[in-house]
Amino acid sequence: MNMEAFVLGCGGVMPLPGRHLTSVLLRREGELLLFDCGEGTQVSLRELNLRWKKISAIFISHTHADHVTGLPGMLMLSAQVDRSEPLYIIGPPRIKEFVDWARDVLEMYINYEIVVLEIENPRVGAVVYTGDGFTVRSVPLSHTRTCVGYVLEEDDRPGVFHPERAIEAGVPRGPLWARLQRGEAVTLDDGTVVQPETVVGPRRPGRKFSFVTDSLYRKDLATEVADSDLLICEGMFHNEFRETAHEKKHMTAADAAELAAAAGGVRQMGLIHYSPRYADWQLKLLLKDAKPIFPNTFLTRDRQAIELPYREE
Ligand SMILES: [Zn+2]
Ligand SMILES: [Zn+2]
Image (cartoon, rainbow, N blue to C red; front, side):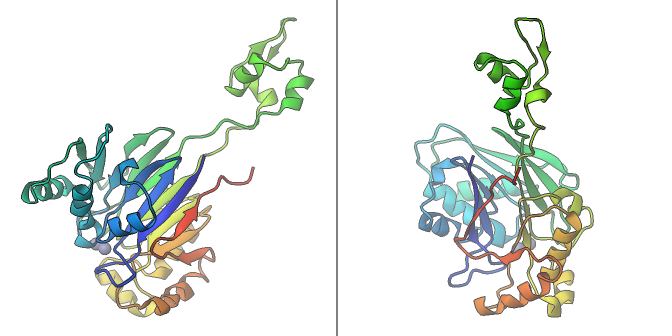
């Protein structure tokens, strides 16, 4: 099953030419999930030729303008589409007010159902969305207003089936193999019971995607994002502006790297939500701070696609 992340915007605060505001789209076997929706999101979506209609849920971290101002445009763009499934918009308190206000003032006519779910207690992590084969948890962040990160985790996959072991155990090829693969014990004609563990390897973990912006560094985040196949994390400033970052309740690139390193098992970390003070060529300052702490750090760029393959077995 394919899983890819697309960076629709990597900027913080204000959009720049060639750098839209924070938004990441995750595509999992045709289904699209959007994380934050800054200004410009729909432009990147169009440039990447991704179908809006396939978005089943939009997860909003917080109601600062650089994370939500793309929403009204996105909803208007798709006001009349051939869509039977509802669109979920999930976020901290006031997200419903924002969506309702936009729909009302802009007099949007929308011909499908929009379900806005406000996270009841954003200070505590909780499952906020369950899809087909995965769940999304919100995790509490520390920012100047209520803010959450999101962690998507796929369900475990069955273990690898070993045909040679099945033959060795005397199980004939056919429906019994399928039952063993499903984790059921089978009884052979001679009365022998074959347990699935005999022929199937241990269950394999699914993939994990984490999205963390905007926040101060929090120790408890490490547990939440541990073993992420991809961690997208705010790294707004380089070390020289450490104090400014922390005053404004943001992470530096080094903070993001500390988090990825402390978490353990993170395969790669993409920095996002850059301060507009950095021109593209200056973003290497962020990488320079982060890499010594977490070598598998990269700079996200608008319209970048990142594959999330299964881990080697
Ligand atoms: Zn922001
Ligand atoms: Zn913010």
